[in-house]
Length: 349
Image 1 (cartoon, rainbow, N blue to C red):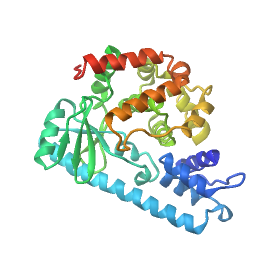
Image 2 (image 1 turned 90 degrees about the vertical axis):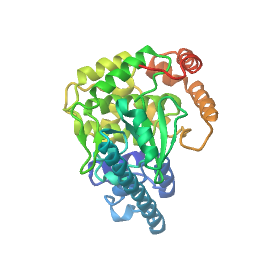
Image 3 (image 1 turned 180 degrees about the vertical axis):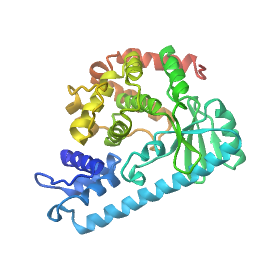
Image 4 (image 1 turned 90 degrees about the horizontal axis):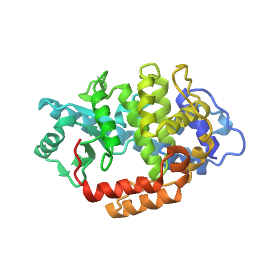
């Protein structure tokens, strides 16, 4: 069922007709698609299947209802986010969207890219953005150094003070400074809103760092691979790959990025023609299997300390991710995090 799910996701991205091989357990595919964050994307592919391979009517109706709920969440997020961006723009604050709505436009149907909360970056206007949100009647929690939580009109907004976690690491601070220096170069507004899609160079590095963090802590899902695949499909000739690899080499992300590229090509059918793009197939099978063996520890209503303990357990239980892909010591990684937590609670660049 896992391979069939991956084939359906690839067909949805390409829009190509597909015929599945082997027996099909549609209930299992539905469960897997929901867990992988690609439920609506797979429904698009189902319409490309021959009549004899369609799922049972009852399940298909349930699938459609679930997809409509995803569409409603997307439209709600986009609507509220646009209102917030307008209010910020009136105060001279630029709202850059991280992931989510900034990537949805690459999908054949943007509303089928599942969105959770809204991640944004306001640059030097981080705290003023918090204050403006409070003036609008939003509730703002500033209990984490990396970002605040803004609750406004049933939307959770993560207002990032930093794009990546920088605590306890000079290298990550340098990476953060680079990300902030390129976020606006070639940035564009999202359709008719004041929401800003960061530059392709920024998105390539930020997506890699974000997915790498998830990979090390809890594993990644097909949705992470879809985001990377579609960024490649649309922006491969817009990205400065020499600069991209200079930073991924420095940060230890290159093998992970190259494996994700190989997976996008071989599993999702993305056509990569830019000769400057590297790929590495050695660990694609292992990472694909790993996608279906891990669970999300974030956004589950768990306490902060519970998430911390689970993240440590996950790291220890998946040391191969550090040794084979990251080429870094797990103990060194944990030591840096503990040191940062104890002695750099509120880091600065």
